[in-house]
Every structure is written in C-alpha cells, then in structure tokens.
Image 1 (cartoon, rainbow, N blue to C red):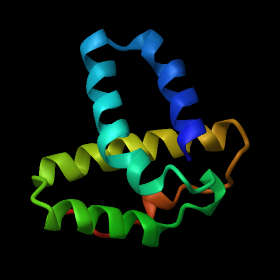
Image 2: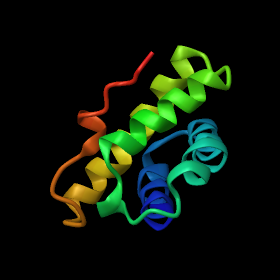
Image 3: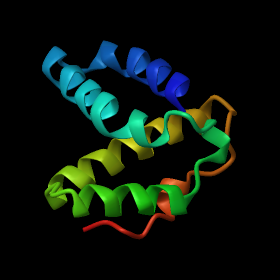
Image 4: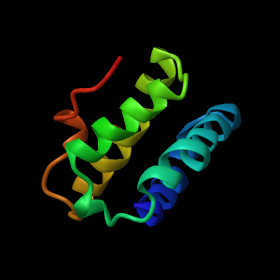
Length: 98
C-alpha cells in the first residue's frame, strides 16, 4: 500500500495547500504506512482497517484523529479504484470508527 499512498499524495498535492499536504504526510508516515504499508493495496481488508482504528483508539488517538486517518485511507483506495488497481474500497465497509 505504501507505493499507492506515495502516488496518491503526489497527485493530490497539486490541488492542496502545502500545510494540508504536510498534515496528510504526517498521518501517512506515522499511522498508515507503519500499519498497512507492507500490504499490496488489493490485500487491504475492512478487518485490517478496523484493527488499525482500534489500535489508534487504544493508543490514545482522539476520535477526530481516527476519522482523519480513515478519510485519508478512503481517498487513497478510491484513487486506486480509479486507476484500476482494486475493484472495491474496504474503507467503506470498515466499522470501527470512534
């Protein structure tokens, strides 16, 4: 998932403020890549995402932070769908949002 994450941020950074891009990169580097980066995009499941959201919550992340991570992941996978790399977005099925 790490490679699609990098391609996605490169694509969207043209339309975002530098501050937003830095914020997204922080979430990606600190939360998303360590948890999911080793998985190919097509192998990411709602269960993986639920586990990530649960772990973030247990480690003290605020509900708004978990929602932000979820929103970034959802956007990354949506872009993967547009590029034809996956057929569905498991972030739409994830249920552990606080």
